[in-house]
Image (cartoon, rainbow, N blue to C red; front, side):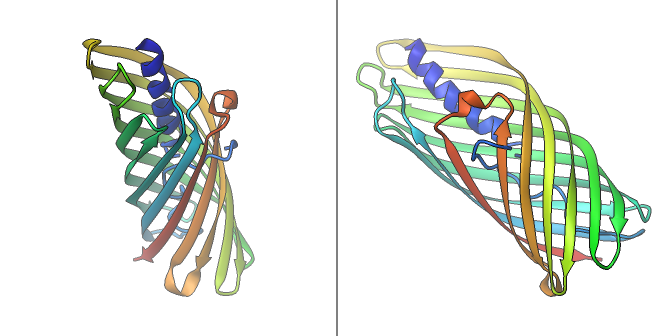
Amino acid sequence: MRKLINTFLFIFLLIIIISPVFAQQSNFMISPPPIPWFEFKEGQKDLRVTATGMYLTGKGGEELTGDIEVYGAGAGGIYRYAFKDIFAFDVGLTVVGAAGDIGKEADMTMWLASVPIDLEILLVNNEQMAVIAFVGFGFSHNYIGIESNVPGYEGTVDMTSDMKGPQGGIQVSFKLADFTVSPFLMLTKQSGNVDIDYDIEGQGSGSLSMSVSTTTIYYYGFDIVYVPLGLSLSSLIQQASESGSNEGFKTYVLNISYCTRF
């Protein structure tokens, strides 16, 4: 039973590590891009709302047969206020829900919420390009419920976690008439706790608690903005620095955003 719970725990940790928000193992973060708009000026306010779609796939490994497939969707927003021509503050919220199969023996449901808070610095802004650096902190709360149909281990496993840590990065935007292309790089350090409750037929019920050691995660991606309508299509790639543990899993996320400035 312990090995089975460890398998479920691995999948859970894989998801919550990529959730803050979100580097390089063909995993995608479950979060909109870190910057609401590619430029700002003193007194400007930006609000960006985002719809998110997610797909995670991988192999079940020794404990489970069949593929792991998880589909999800969510929504989020990020607000910015520029208190100087070169300085701005932003705060966001993203909520994502998902469900799927963990091999042929288990079903999974999940939801997560993440909150980034950043200070932005506008390093360059001219007719051709804009460069914004940012530094801040990220929080996330995550839940996964698993219903196991493994012979001899039928039952449920519920896992919750709270993760937090500093983050920072840079976004470079190239202004091309009505379109702007904005590649970016982001780094975050995440740590936290996981609580596990299980009720397995024939094995009993109980609880476990463990800490998640600090993991450095890199994110890179790009945003394509159609400036006249304030619409953007974003994709982000994520990778934990200790990426060996993620081998065999791929997660794809697509974000469609609308930004209004006032």
